[in-house]
Image 1 (cartoon, helix red, strand yellow):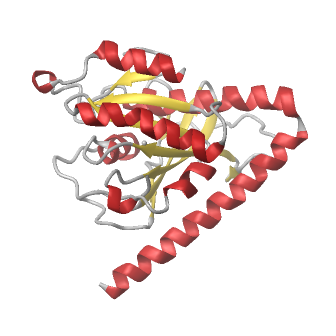
Image 2 (tube, helix red, strand yellow; image 1 turned 180 degrees about the vertical axis):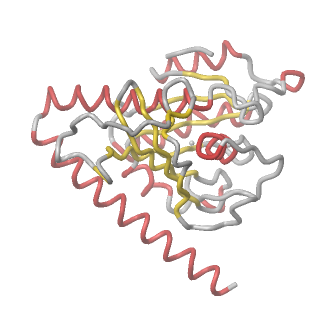
Length: 261
């Protein structure tokens, strides 16, 4: 591991459902182990997005089709790995975690990499708080496209100061590797973000990816709070309300599609 994903959701076991996927009731802690004790969340400013006493972090996973975005997400949420996934159409997941002693609720959008499913991606970009860009070590094109995903985020958000984590998935397939670890590190250095080589099949560094992104969101929030004060809080509030509207619209659209089918 070296320190430092546009829009549709689903996997084979979830079959193109737009229902909210809730993670295990166990509270996940930093080392990936379950914690049966009750979570004691630190006080969070009332202007922040809260649900059930937990700060909600809106995370979007981006990357080309077939790189393993759904597999990574499913491993984090349910500790399961499926050998086969239908191309993701749209799914959202939630997972509780305790990160650096502070409780969090991760609201994850697993997006599609296929070009036919990218019409609504800009909406995800505008409302996500943090982004995971995923490529496969056995697919050089997906590595080259990672820079394009970052450029798209910057274009939609009009800023380079965005919480981001770069991951190279399928690191267990070493014999088929097309992208070196050093290339991944160099790209992450260009992005100015954390980097992990992951394996959804072996569950390598899966939790670390999501925890690192939450840490990046928290760090940048503190920086904005020091620099912008109440103006940043108003902007965050507008982004939060837009996020929930978008989720509701997507759920309605895909329900209608399933009914028509």
